[in-house]
Image (tube, rainbow, N blue to C red; front, side, top):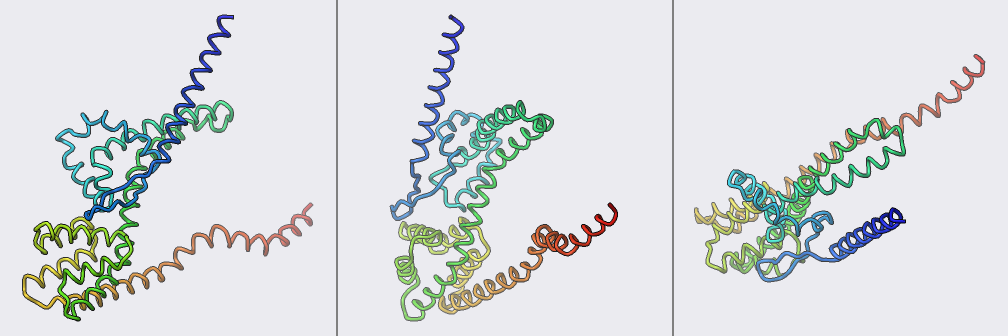
Length: 304
């Protein structure tokens, strides 16, 4: 009787814990995360669910992530977060803490799942340790892969939008409008995207008293991509040498359009090479089966 009661209490406790975890996950999944732009507007940013679940626990690791020996690592991560557009939403210390918590928590569930499957399937039992270690390694690398992917997508968006913004600036400057007024008009007419966010931040810095050169340097450092660095350095050089900005913008527009054409041409040339893999894996075996299948069947029939 006592044993049955203890089993019932254990099942009840486990059920309550599972219900609590499920409610917490559901509550966190419904929350929307935002970043505040330089002009006060809020823009939605999506964090992975595992990040949102573990983010409240990151202060517990502050004693480790705030150590002086990790200063360079924190600075590097902070630059990456700025390039990805997550500054203000996710700090470098929180990201380093997530790199520890994600493999610990998700890896623990992965190991428990592997043990459960290994008890059922003998094949999995032989490779259970390898599967568990592989899962933990993947969970450890997941925050890094996620951040790199965010940076890549943001850079791609800026790379596509920058030539059009430069064209608008060129038309405005050649029409007699000064650079800042033309930039503000270009920003006002564009929908909100990564490039618009960065230009709003640059305009805000200039309005707060920073020089145009300083704001352009900060823009190039934040975005950290070749096209933006070329654009910013060209404008800084034109400002220092007194060259007409309209001429510089026209040259930059032509150069970026040519680079964009070169990138498209390079991707088109790489396409046949990338298609070799699917051809070798899927199409060629099917063709060989269709062509050689009847011949092999006839030979096998003659031998039998």
